[in-house]
Image 1 (cartoon, helix red, strand yellow):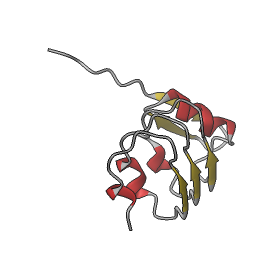
Image 2 (cartoon, rainbow, N blue to C red):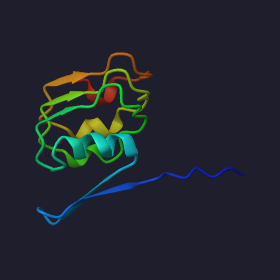
Image 3 (cartoon, rainbow, N blue to C red):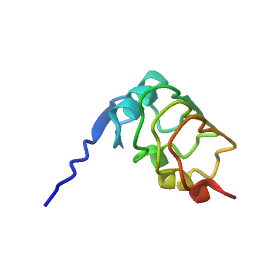
Image 4 (cartoon, one colour):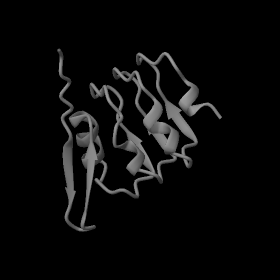
Length: 102
């Protein structure tokens, strides 16, 4: 029997009194370096070694998201980002674009 351990990195936002959680610590670091707020409208996280997007749905105000040159496979967490108008997924491992098709 195999077990998969998902490491959730908690990003504390003392000023907003909120905590954002991400499945991938590299994604969490990129968000933190971009201001670490749920209200972010742009996130450039290319070439960061990001594999998992779990938690990104908390960034509901994103209009621009750059994830080029990572190891992303599953785009389902992006389906909730209805404000997203520009998405760069170049050089990832995505097989199914249906979560962001629209």
